Length: 268
Image 1 (spheres, rainbow, N blue to C red):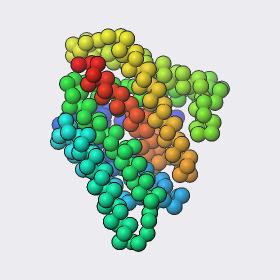
Image 2: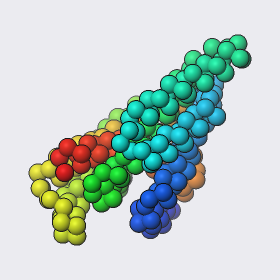
Image 3: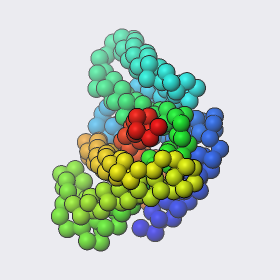
């Protein structure tokens, strides 16, 4: 537990620095994070004899993030083009190899949608009005909920939430995690109002906190489901106490869209 806490505390200043620098720097950092997470995802399936088209997938991922950073307004169309191009490239490779690697293709595209598309939305969020402020809300919703769920779960958690998918998760921890996301959202809204003059409506922050908290836990359970299928405990070991990069961002990925659409249509 101590290792987990120390790693988390060291990561906070790094996140502050990246978001403070912003601009092109955040695009390059996000490319690196996404490529590592995607490689971890592809590598996990090797144990069940599924070998993704690594070159096509990783290259497509880098193009997606670059496109979202350079031209965020047209990112949705660009992402579609990249997915189609990646699919065609994989089919060409299958033809040359005279082998229909359809499972491999499925995992290649799933990784791009699950990781790269959602990560690219982080840059789309960043470039919205007040995006540099609200990008923090993504991490608040995911990590406040995850932290509270973890500590309450190991302390008083008795009733299993989804034992077939994640045996250690409890209903008590899940409820605490949802409460953490909601309270974190409300606190964030108040701070954003005080420091940046952003319109602060408690009901909106409660709603986005509730939706974000649910999606964060769904992202965590989705990652557990995938890892159980692939036969791995963690996606990697690059972050002591947390596993791989994807293990740390699994809940964040599902929160990004809700914050993006909240800012675009409700926060102004």
